[in-house]
Length: 119
Image (cartoon, rainbow, N blue to C red; front, side, top):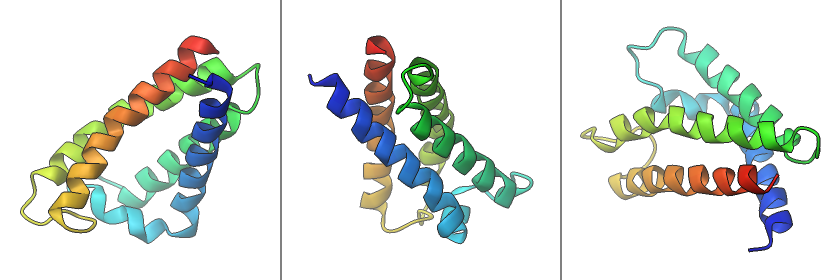
């Protein structure tokens, strides 16, 4: 496993995802359950965290902490993706997309965990 490559790749992915929260904010709103207060704030704050953690992966002094933040954030997103997976009509795309997004959460958790271990 070329950890340097995977660290950079995760940094690019998380930075892009974080920026996405600001570029297409409304796209993220449907996955946040309506019963949660201040849904727009949740999207913005999670975007700030993703952006900060993604950029942190590029800085050796912050890499370990950034990877751990990503692990915690992805675990935190699991309930949202689980909730969406079992809805009659998933928030973003057809049901098979919700299945892929749900599975990807575990891949991202593992990926960030491996980066954390090697940081």
